[in-house]
Length: 124
Image (tube, rainbow, N blue to C red; front, side, top):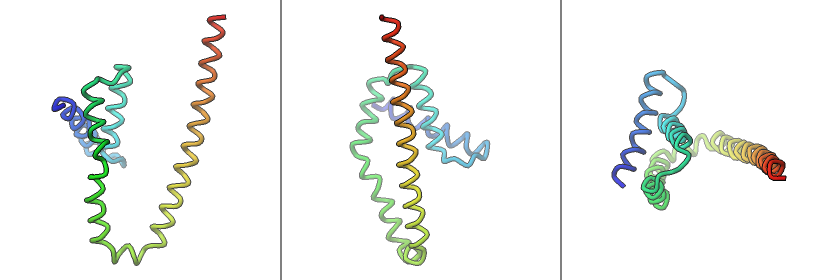
């Protein structure tokens, strides 16, 4: 578990380092996650200990919202002053997420149907 947690943190650190070095407009942890995804894609499998560690972190994910909630309470006056812009941003981002998810899902379904058709063609 310690090795898996270290690997996850190293991916995040690598992402932070690359973002700061190249002044990229992307959060470091997001780039670190992309590095982790690339590593797992090359391996074509998720190591058991890494899967177990990630599952444990996801199981307790709700604890990570406590600091965010405290931050909201600390800035309640500013939020009340800018509620319309915040609500608009939340609405637009939610709709964009739903649209992108639908487009990706349709593309994946099409791709999976093409794969199935190619496999049937090889077999038959």
